[in-house]
Image: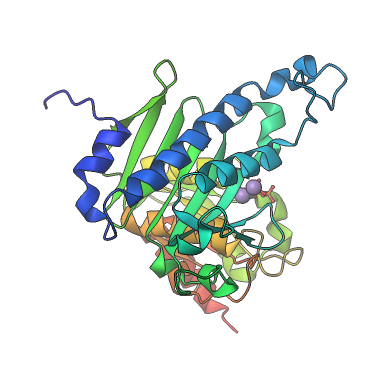
Length: 336
Ligand code: AHG
Ligand code: MN
Ligand code: MN
């Protein structure tokens, strides 16, 4: 195989025709996302130093108040994207309501809305374990020339024009799709450039890892309990291995590479599940389907759910197609 050294910028230009909207728009969106990701990456990398550098604890060396990293990441992503003259509105896990890009910032004339989970798995920060950022991009449905409205954000996952995540792991990677497969790029920190390291990523049809917070077992619905017992039963290819990082991005990333299923079900403690449809499940579901995987709420495709509210939660089953189908079989047995 010839040696290839393709940067993200080159890859976007080469594949521009796959983004069915105006030329240059995808590069602007992706450039601003990757730039913001570099800033967040830098901050995440020195998280352990914050107390040392911040001296008194809540004021940093520039005299600014230290913010929690998820608020920091939120601000960096929104501000960076705003400057690129392409986004008309944001919705974020960290904002109560959606954010309108004002007419002064040209927002009324822009066409895209961005939905983000700026820092996913943020409880892992304190213990030096991988975290991520998840993003999802739609074209607005309200007319250009007006401020964005709620309807622009409450679109079915099927309408996404691009989605992806950044994993701040042992290396920093960007993984994204525009509906033509999934590609992964690794940041070379010395050069500040992302290189195509994982072309055309696919979930193996079948895997041997299940990822679920099994500590909540007693609170799970019967279908999930039975599926977990199925994973643990001794058979030719079982028991499966349990791996749970506690950051959806990282668990998903591992399962896509090695094969596996991630489950965050409903429970008596969280009757609608924990994960958010718009910021977490839809973008991951788009990636999963583009990578030959499957994403479900236990009964139906995540991407077909009509959202009714911004911070809506859903149960989430995502991963290797055969494993998600098997979990759905168990769920269906107990469907009310
Ligand atoms: P966030 O940090 O954005 O709130 O998301 C955390 C999510 C998800 O990434 C992770 O898999 C899950 O919550 C972990 O929840 P539990 O600690 O309940 O298992
Ligand atoms: Mn999250
Ligand atoms: Mn988050």
